Length: 100
Image (cartoon, rainbow, N blue to C red):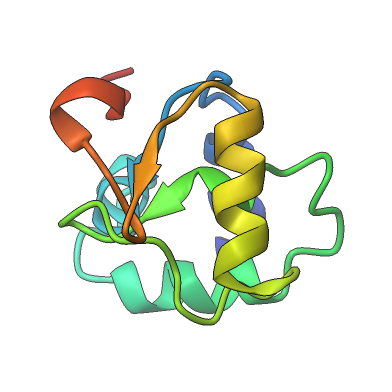
């Protein structure tokens, strides 16, 4: 399995209404120092509807300023559609972080 496939496989397990961080994904797939590479893999996501990359935020809960599939407003909209509150470009990790 390639690095990208590992990222996508993990992300498919994140439930609606929850978010994870780039670092959490890197750690979960056995590459704890590869958070930046996770972001690059998400930018290459060939199936953004199937692989919910909009559920990924940074370690502070900030949305991606360069969300690859429509910008920060699109990411916020997709998260809100799942019941996630977004305020000023941030998600409250104490409420929405998935601990799966």
